[in-house]
Image (cartoon, rainbow, N blue to C red; front, side, top):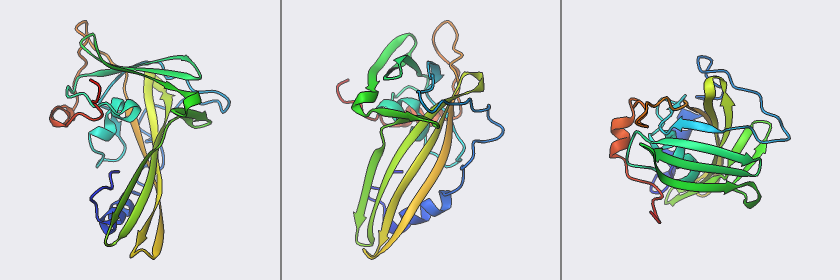
Length: 212
């Protein structure tokens, strides 16, 4: 959730509305696979870049896998994300469209880019702060990735933080949202089918495209 420029009382209203919306993995989605507590789950595969969220109000960028992993949002709605995992300590991410690699990045466990536990592989948290005349708010958001049946990539987004109203009253914030990214089932031209969010994604601004 982006806080910059958002009045604290509106921020609180939004969080209270969303809290508890998706505490449990949707029962009509593919079954989550087990995760061992002493190793990272195997996430290798090629996935549609635009996924689904259990929360109907989730914005397109939050459902874009490349944004969540490496803060890169391609303008094309038909890109894919390929994940290679040479070891528990390394995660290689490629954003692909029609056979061409648009962006490539490597995440390292020993650099704090991710860590693993019994719930999955957790990407480094993103921190956001908002401050205005009504108070201030701070949040930390991360996603934990794990496999689900049918070669689906599942993710649990965990947001926690605090908002202070009138600079005096602290209110803790906790929120969980589930996401899924289906495996890419593209044809020979490397172009996967497009879902409902494609039109909106094609109009979205690229995120983190420095050094392109």
